[in-house]
Image (cartoon, rainbow, N blue to C red; front, top):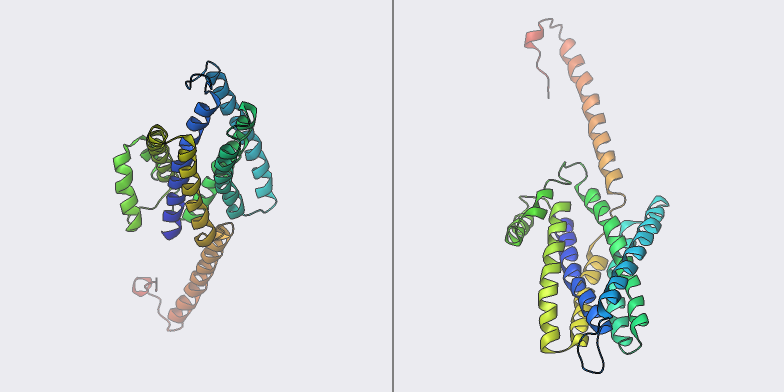
Length: 261
């Protein structure tokens, strides 16, 4: 349960830190420096930012899939995804006055993080929940209200319901919603750089939590298989011994023979 709760927490916090960054980036790229408002070029710039991230996401997913085939673990790939966000925030702050093209290029890190998380997240949940039959038991949570997510998080913490793909996806949506709302409040009361700095520091939390407290899950399924084989072997060895012991007493009445299991 601890590893599942940690995965949910990292997914929520990373989404909370990430979702607002694109809005802030679009406002920074579309600013009219003469009157301080938004220029007409803001819409194509935001569209370009989204397309850049999507293209990079596709490439990152393909490359990460090849790496998993070569035996690269889940943890380093997920850490790379989490690390892409603070790097992206720092670059946007640094390149604020460097022009729209420079700001647009930072979306490469958005695509990198999104592609890696989208690929590795199901692997993580599958490794942790393997053998329980509960990998997708909470998939309908994505259709629930955000209030219900808090209830399920409580139940997960108290070990009544396991965290699965549906739960982590719900936390992703909840984090994104809160990020857009609170992030834009910071922009209104302060400025874009302050909102990005907040995202930068918040994004370090899941990175450090996952680095220090999450083990590599690549071999968890193999370990579970080995435990099942050992249990089956012990069971198969136990039955013949018990039956041969009973038959040595010369009893032929099958109704009086009871299985030791």
